[in-house]
Length: 504
Image (cartoon, rainbow, N blue to C red; front, top):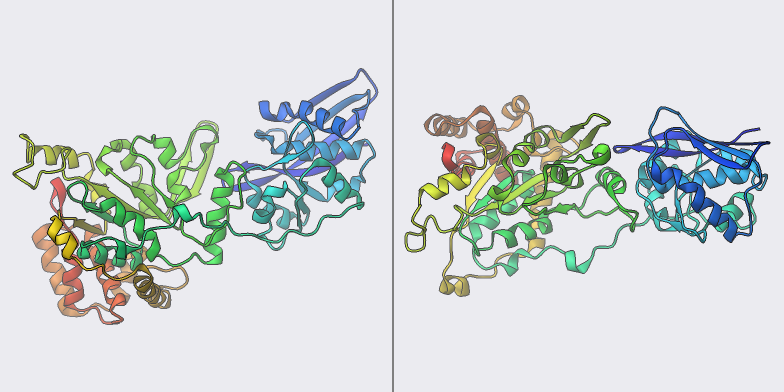
């Protein structure tokens, strides 16, 4: 007979069901594995042989064949160790075949039989719940997988514990879901620790309220990076649905560390030397990049013009659609990538183009060349563009501490609640469609007239027109005003500069 159990093959953020079949027959002792296994899967035979030896078990002197079905689906990763071992134990008669067939498992085995954490346990739990099978994952992955309440999750630490659980000798308790604790060293800064720059703080509040993209330009050392790193302190916690969406991507991309589920919006800040594949995704298996890992959170690009122009232009698709498609010869993956883009840039390479006393000899040409690395279409996708001016020592010492992030966060949460009432669950002003925006923004005639005059004078594109209207709607929501009047529109227009080398 053939014994079988189940595991998954990770295809992007989805987990496809894989049946692990094991058959033994008379013949010369051998251990064959078929079904397009990669090197890591093929090497499982040696890990399993050693792990069984640690349990005082040995492979029989028979011809053993392992088949991973479907045969035309590539199998990658060491998480196939545990299901292969379970299928083998069922074939040896140490485990009931029916129990093995009703189990979905994943885990990497060490030579002494311990189970190492693996990536992708959260999508595996979703597949197990859909297939109505119990799930077995390493102990370090249990709290993550248990977030799928419909799946019965057990988390053994060793192969021996897994065997005793499946045979009923020492059943393991059902795992409870866990949340990743916030590392104190990664907590965002509070805005009241930053002196001055009140206009920039106001722009951050508007961006947080409506989900808008923000670009800050200004001389070096004026607090642009500090402001960006304090921005997450203004954002509300993720909803349960958003937590699950974000955790699935992080589970697939993770290296099997602690639980990937957290209520804190993700904050990704890649170095400007990162490759396009690292930012947008790709590489082996077309895995997720920083734009996907920042889903439902913030992507901060410091020193924006220093990024490769091709990498920056590749951000256009996720900024508009909220997802990114990675197409390769051997893989085609679609990743959710709805994030807020916060960027910071110096006005030129030396950073002092606006200060005649400090600017280099190439000013103002150096500023045009430097900011010209950012394409016009990408520049146009920033809802708010502000300058962070230099402050003297006297101005900094005299500047008040300002409001704490917690107070601003309360206003942001209230403004987002108004947007949910207007647009529905998950709705934000930044995501509103052009037609719905014009019909339901409640903009007064004088506000629309002001916007029309500004669009004609500064040559706003259709995209720019609607982005100003979205920002104005967020300003009105922060003011708890349903009508959008000309004062809200005027403030939104003031955040439309600087225009860079391309005007508005």
